[in-house]
Image 1 (cartoon, rainbow, N blue to C red):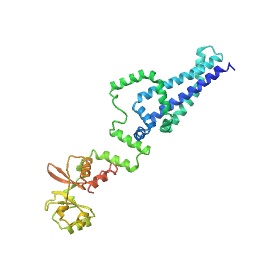
Image 2: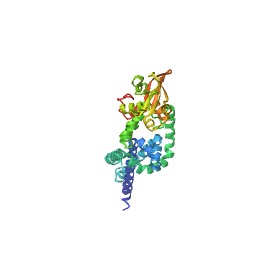
Image 3: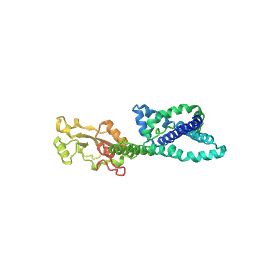
Image 4: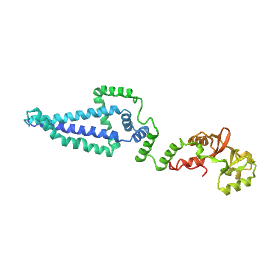
Length: 334
């Protein structure tokens, strides 16, 4: 029985190191595969497990170095276990023992220590990371004295390269935002209408409001001296709920609008029911114009350039463009 103990010890070491190799190989694949967006949202909602994963996402050098140390320890342990068994079996030549140990452990180490765990973590990265991140944190603390010099060197190089101050996901440029939208759809975080809304916001932000101006000659409005019935008949004919008004005889002097419901129900003079339009500079973007209209709770805004009225911007028209496909940038008045 005592003669079997070295073999049992070598077998136990082999199984433990094979499991360790599978753990670090799988976790490493899961780390690169997991959605940063999903982890970030879960962490912000107060999930403590997601916060642990997010910390490593924001400090990737700590994660990578810990995984590398763990993998090296596991591989060394596998080799040592087979070497002990080979020497115990009577193979005295060290070179022969190493060659035999390599040939013996390679299929097992590759299949059960690399291939299978990597495939599993590739298919379900977040779920498996959530199950095993506690173990990884424990190994991170155990390996910390060894990893500290390496992480220090890595951070020095990050600072020298100018990337040390950046965190993943902090800088959301256009390409990064597109990636986030794509991940959001894949992870089920964004519905189709939400995705189209965000894409619309992205496109509106860079387009000038002049592309959506309703020219003076095409504005469906009336002079401010018409009778109440004329306003109601006009609204009924064109199917509008708000009617822009201008100075009599001046089609380029739009300054306000009448809500049909106010005209129909109110008894005050029409001049007292006119709502002033906010003034929008012609150099503003569509998104800026929409924000100005929403801030003023206005249906229309007057677009001007050097004091001259170019036309009107419609809240409804601009908002409608948020949900359109990027290539279909229609006019607000169409």
